[in-house]
Image 1 (spheres, rainbow, N blue to C red):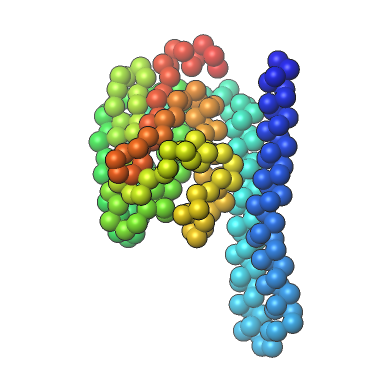
Image 2: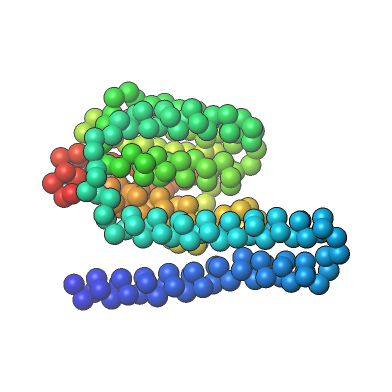
Length: 237
């Protein structure tokens, strides 16, 4: 128990350091843009542009805080009390329908092989967000022409969901790190984001006792979500 408390305290300190470090940059940018508008803007149009940029920066900061609050809520485990039987096949089919057009617009190919009638016990909204975050991550951080595939297979009591792509992948030494808060690969720092998308995935998976495996897709990346036996999860809810 003492080791667990120490681990939680270390995690809290690390999160506090991460928040201070990663929010300093957008807050500094916001202040610089406002200061520039105050000293250099000479027309109403100049001020309007400055205000729009400031609003965009503020929205990014609010999105980061919103993600942190969602992760904290999930890790507290309070949403487990509302778990119900979820048609996981339907959840994945809805995600595919939602992102197929988005993938085409970004010159990606989104494919799916989803077995019908597979159910799990959980929170539908959180499970949807977990899978959607992985799909969005693949769309955002892979080059045009990348093939992204969503697969759902049995057994019925413990389904397995696999999301894979044939993009550039992630070095083996960094695969577990991408599930940490604010961690971003050097290759992804030029794209928008807070580094919280996959940490939210990890939090949802932990809440549902889903095992997450990150493997090489040769080429690309493969994430495997192994759902626990529904009876096992029910006994531990």
